Length: 413
Image (cartoon, rainbow, N blue to C red; front, side):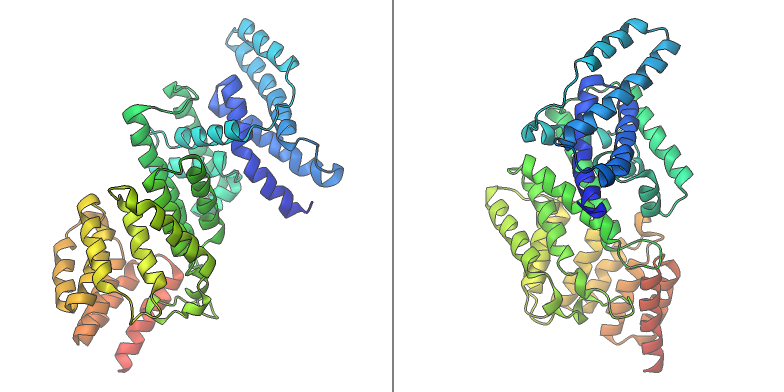
């Protein structure tokens, strides 16, 4: 197996192994460190010695041995030798467990819920999810956030301590707690995907590793909870959005807006899969924000051209979405849809209504939308000013270049 193949295998096994170790020993933060050391050992040994007969069992054994060492040292310091002795006895009888896919995937799902504990900040939830469930190293997570590795190490360490100190058991939350935590899990996966699909900073428009990891984790969620409409909607939304990625950039990596994309480059397989998921989920009952956004994405993806897009249907879905979501970005997209159906003045009027939302105070998108609508309405001077303001607030290099290009184009005209 190639190096990349081993990396993919380890990434898929990470939540299974971590789940097994946490279930057996508890102590999430120490277990996570032990599993990471086992992954490092596998990366070093497997390319030279070949894959073990049972890779998962091998990793559990190595991680458990390291876990026992760490616990013995920690418990001795805290004068809990009796507890450590019990753990040592458990370790002596440890044998690679048979692969039980249902147990493994259940453990992975529990890990997702643990990493999205409400006591953690959203950024910590994302970082811990990528590290513990996604199998990314601290260095990889740090690169994803564009922060120094030392800073990310401290963030992840604090998050693990918060989970440890919370005393939550390694079990699936139930009742209202589960519903609330599920919202957090889906939100974290959505944020990871969005950062991968449209990077908020840096020279690249997207980070394929992040969006791919979000899709992988969302697929795992869907396998475990296939009847949940919002889980289904999130997977479909990711697939339908990711399908357009090949056409989002030009030869030099420049941003290509939806209206100008070559739809022949869109991934027809992902579109078909996303549409099938929506078709199965919508008849089940009331739709939440992810399923509604997926339905909107499907309308875009199935349109033969930008001019043939069914904007009236998109506007209708946004009207429904506005009732279940307080997101200012949803309101912004609703204004765009209204402009496409009722004219730019209608969109500009809605844009004024959300202009005071503090959540968009430092966001370039409202200014970019205003520039586009002013251009359509014939106010070129106003459009130039709005595009310039949008460029001032944009943090991504490709977004800045695109906005400056619009300013130059209109200035010449």
